[in-house]
Length: 145
Image (cartoon, helix red, strand yellow):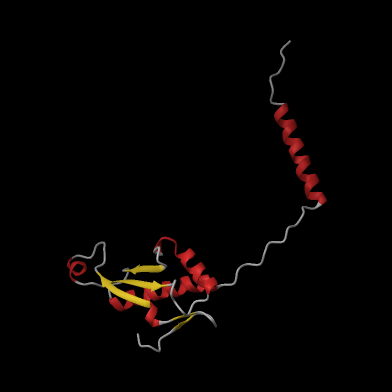
């Protein structure tokens, strides 16, 4: 990744290549000899807390959405090892990071407007409740004289 390869997510949200650190590690799981010899999995570390390309609102939401993938220092760690090549795993890790930051950059949903139930729906609900009540009262013991 050259210095020009910024990942642009929104107008004011940019991931700079200097904020990303990639280490290649051995993949876990099945794979025979190849998995023991070749370090194809990538561990991507993104310093979200000190990233200059993230506004404060997006930075906080990104760390919150990352959950356990975020360290106490605000570094997001993404491990990608689902593919057999370093390049595919690297692209996968970057795509997952981009998706995470893009989700955090979405505008918050509009506030919910409180609404009242219609008079008819209230009456129908109360009528069905009283009907159930009658059915349950009739389930009592029958007096045998």
